[in-house]
Image 1 (spheres, rainbow over the protein chains, first blue to last red):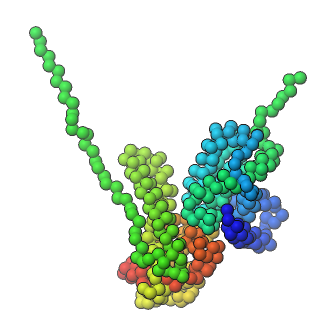
Image 2: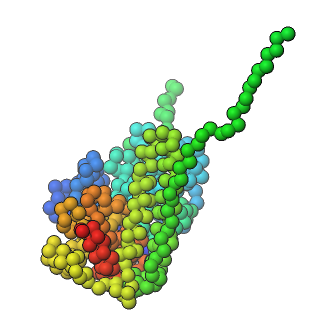
Image 3: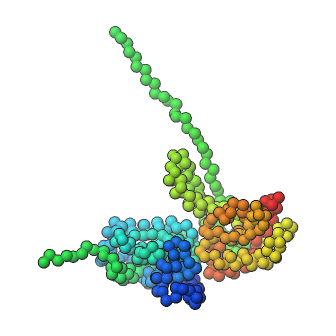
Length: 197
Length: 225
C-alpha cells in the first residue's frame, strides 16, 4: 500500500468522516456514547440514522489501519492458527473465502473476518457501504476496506491483487491475536476444563 | 409354432427442442479517442473506465443472462430471483455507462456548449437557470455517500425536469418508471480518482466542460414530443 494512498485515505477520507462526525456530535442525542455503542445504535436495525455513516466509517477505518502492520502477512501462529483451521479447514481455505467475499461485493463495501458470538466460530462476510459486524452484534477481527479509494491509486481496477497483497504482506496477525484475546472475554471458544478432583 | 415378432423401434429423431437465441451484449465503441476529453477527464481514466470497468459489466451481465436463461428454462424460480441483484448491478452498469459515453463530447466537437432550444427553455422554467441546475447536480453528486450516479431526468408523465441520484449501478428507471435520463454523471470513485483523488467537487466542476448538451437536447425533444 503506497504512502500516497495512506496519506489520502487516512488524511483526507478518514479525516473527513472524523470532522463530519464531530459536527454531528455537537447536536446529536448520541453524544456520550462510545463509538462502538454509537455505531450499533445509529444503525437502528437497518434504518440508519444520519450519524451512522460517519460513526461507522470512523470506527471501521480505525479498525482497518490497526488490522495492518509493516511487514505483515505470512501466517498466524498458535491458538489463532488453530482456530482458523478449526473454522475454515485450512489457512488457504480461509484466504480463498476472504478473497472471494471481497470480490463479490457490488459497489463500495468491506470484507471482514469476524467472530460469531452465538456459534462461537470465526467467519468471513462482505458488507455494503459502511456496515460492519458491529451492527449485527458480532466481533470483528480483521477489516479490509474495499471502497475504490482504498486501492485505485495502487492497483487501478485489479481488486484481487489488492486483496492478495493485503493478506500476504499487510495483515497484522498480532492485532488479530490481541482482538481474539479480548473476544475471549465475551465468548468461550474452547471447552471448559472441569477438574477431575 | 407361433411367431412372435417383437418390434421395437428406437426413436431416432431427437425430442423436439425449442431453441431460443439469447441476445447478449458487447461493449459499445467510444465516439471519440480516450484522450479527447482532456484536461477535464484524463485519457488514463477514460481508457480504464471503458476497457476495464464497462467491459466487466458487459461480461458479467452476459454471464448473468445465460444463467437466467437456464433458470427460466428449468422453471427454477429460486434461481431466477437470486440472479436479480447480479442482473441489476451488471445490466445497470452497462445501461448507465452506455448513456454516459454519449453524454460526453470533446470540446472541439461541441462539448460544454450550453443547451439551446426546447431543453434550454425547460431548464430555465424548472430550475431558474443553467447555473442553478449545474449547482444542484454538483451538490447532489458531491453529497452522494458511496457510489452512484446523479441524473438530469425528464419526467414524461409530469412533463418536468428533475435531478435524481441512484446508488451503485441502479438505472434511473428504478427511481420512477416515467423518468428518462437526459444526462448522467458517474460519481463512482473510478470515474475520477486517478486524476482528482478524493476531491469529487473538482471533478464535478470540470466535467461540464465536456458535457454533450446536444445529445441531451435530442433525447429531450424526442421524449417530450
